[in-house]
Picture 1 (tube, rainbow, N blue to C red):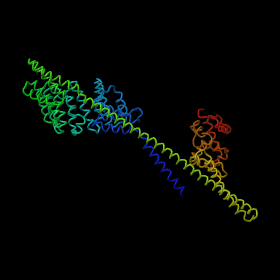
Picture 2: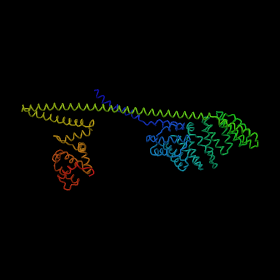
Picture 3: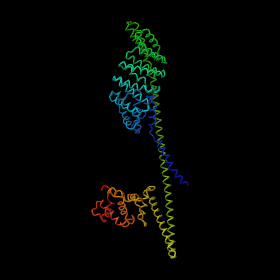
Picture 4: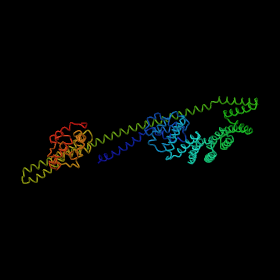
Length: 579
């Protein structure tokens, strides 16, 4: 009973061990790809640092290599790093264009367009953006929709295709993204090209409507985000020379700033704009506020502007005082090493954190290897135990059959003696003896099967081989039996196993033979005469002769005689399929 339970539990143990091996043998780079994907939108610099710890990307699996290429390109682009070639993103494009999801296809084509545009290949970049636009129609991530539409809006605006550019920007705004998603993608910066566009009055009116919608979205953000966006837009207006618009935007920035140093910087910017507008009193007031800053660089910039203004007015003496203040601030700036020391400390900290992370990955990999080796050893041990148990079980069965055969032989001998002693009971005893003979032959057949199984180099022969052997023993035994419909395939298997693929060679050489013609060839190859074949198939001898004639004709034997048939079947053992 214990042995049977152990044998039943063995498959369960094997499944458990295989699960352990599978779970422990996963690619060690998978966590890095997951973390890189996690940080991509919120902290692209961190995503780049994590992905950069994969020292051998070429060793990644077929599914992970394109994911690494896409994530690395996204992280480099979003963190402002220069990409010198499109070879990396082409790995992702080549894979996802064949079997990726719509989101993956659209992302791959989009970032290929970014890379090509940075490399100056605008035509190819536009083609990649258009491919992304096709794929994004069925994509689920609205952030990808937004980036594709703004990229197409930007590149069309650069080439003065204002109507088309406006259409794409309108699509991006109509997505109604949430404020966190808008901030994660830098929505305020990608819409800055709207302020560079010029066109017909109708076009300018539509741009104004889009700007109103854009400002409505910006006003729903937190003050920090509004401050950054309005400042970037103010700089755009300043570059165009729209001083009133720039001043209005900077006033909005000052209303939303929460730090003194940032306010001082904006005061200096606004003072420059008021200088262009001729508002001297407001300019001087703002510069006086900016000089309260603790940043030497900002104060030096203000002193330099004041020096230039006084010098232009011919007030050289007052201007020299501001020049001296400018020089003092520069000396203070260049002698201060606190910022450099802080940067050096930050670099050392980042490097030590990276080393700790690498050590953690190595430790995990070592543990995975050890667990895998232990699981393999356990699996080998379980296989050896199961083989020993199975072998012992077969030996017990073989001994029991031999013992039963010996007992039956003793009974046969006893009955034979009774027949000789009592002739009157001869008929009854003869029938019993025949029945025992039949049972003995059945046992002997089973003994031969088990002996072949036990002596094989494998634990057991396949079930098909054992069944084929039984059919063979039925045909060549004393009470011959053959059912073509049920036994033909098994007989073919036996001829292939016992005679090195005899049936396969026959089929390869003469593929036009019917099943009935193959039966005659198979039975004759086993050593049966044509008369015995006729009796076994329960047909007349003339029917077998006609079959032999047809076989000879298909074999290319001109006369179609029995002698040619016998000679050809005899030669089959030495022929090959290339004949």
